[in-house]
Image (cartoon, rainbow, N blue to C red):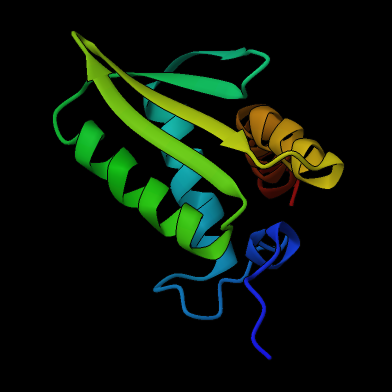
Length: 129
C-alpha cells in the first residue's frame, strides 16, 4: 500500500554534497573570499536568517545569483534569495527549522571573517618563509 510522504520524508538532509558541483570545495571558498573581500558592504542577522549586503558593482548581481544557485544545489537545507535595491545587492539566507542547520548558518555568517583571517595568516606564513 502506498502512503503519502510524511513531512520528515520531504525534509532535506542537513549536509552539503558537492559531488555534482562544477567546482571543488576549495574553489568555492576562494570564490566566497573574493566576493566578500571585494564587494561586501555589510551584514545582519535577523530572526529569519542572515543578510549579506554587497555593492552593486557591474556583474555582481549575476555572480551572486550564480553562486547562490550552486550553493543551494549542494546544500538543499539553505534558502537563498538574491535581490537588487538601488546600488546594493542583498543575499538573504535562511535554513529549515533544525538546530544543526542554524549552527551551519551561524558559521556561514562568520565566513567573511574566517576567510579574511585565513588569507591574512597565509600571507604572514608566506612572508615568514
